[in-house]
Length: 434
Image (cartoon, rainbow, N blue to C red; front, top):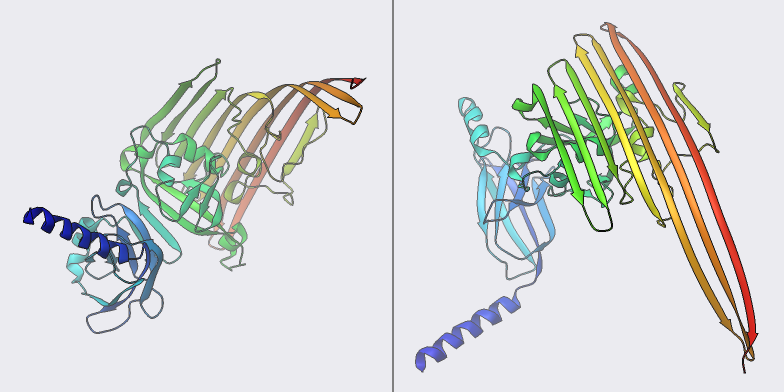
């Protein structure tokens, strides 16, 4: 009996202690070397103890201090990395106060001949160099067969919505490169939805400069978030691809596939999809508005647009084909080719994409209105078919003439077609209430 009472007392005491601990806390500290010098820009990471998966990360400011706000009060591994210094690691237990101040964390410098060994063995989940955040893909586990999009969803600081749009550090990602080269006209979704996560070695998030700034070397202040996917060595040479098939009830299904052949000079890719689940798979900001190295925009003289079979669409935003209100069912098809060539002073990139969507809508609406001595009803029936298709072609050649002169030629073409048919009927009925 005494043992039972003692056990109950211990459990109650443990429960009371845990109940007093806050659920969310702030973890902060300061990174310094053994001489007491603050190490600004040191990378600080919070890891899960069970599998070392990354929970959050921060970079020390000019005074060497860092802070994690509103994190769950739990067990963590705190890891610090800084170029030329030994990695620092500390186990953190749940804090009894809302602020867990770790004080000064001192890390030791390493001899130059040991740097390469330490870097190879440390394998931190991420590193920060300037404005570039580099994620080690192997540190973030995803199920077999996952896409790059699935991998990005695991990375702290990166958000991917249900449509596949990407945000990094709260800003929209406008471009996804593959080994530093354009992939289907800088379309972010072409790479993230079609390339497999198993092909990627590193994910680099950076602020990309404008083409003008790259050529002149003068920063014009125009920057946009971009991601570079670095392939594993075995995928940089040779061919690989992926096919995805899914089926559901009521004859619903999806088929998506791609084939890629890469080497040091060339990149060739072909992709295609078809489905009847209201996914067009494309976005005008992705396929139509080729930006950066393979670009045109509304002010680009190389942009030519044509329309027939209906009025020309304005594709400044929103989906390229599914400018619909969510009503009805769509059958969708798309296919494209991408080819890049880089050798010495010559760079060539080209892409073609075709997509189409057919919307079918049958809508029935009945409305009754009751008055004091009568009522009336309206019955509306609507049948609608909407077919839209688009062709997009982009080409860019860059030839370095000498150290101070570069010739760039680019051409872009898009053609759109639409057919809309609508049948609508309305019935009106009134009667007295007896």
